[in-house]
Length: 121
Image (cartoon, rainbow, N blue to C red):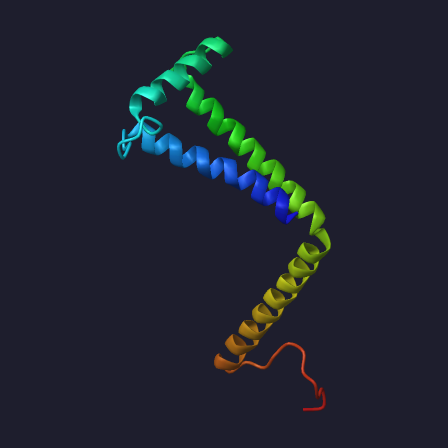
């Protein structure tokens, strides 16, 4: 699973860095990060796909969102037993905390709890 996450995150990270650096023309003296190459790449993709070049970043963002959800679902499926145990433990702790808070409120108000350990009192 670690390799899948690395192989998924590395291209996304590289593309994101290239996209935002070239979009803002922060080229550091290279043509690779220039705005001219940025526009040329999206113009080429637009011609190949038959889509306006300004719509391609949105399409890429949608694809990245879908891929991210797919990878998250795959990860959750593989870790479902651990996630289930965490969820049950979390729920039990929340119920104990609510019961303790209720008991504290009851005692602070000077009332007797509804269920006592010694009914003879």
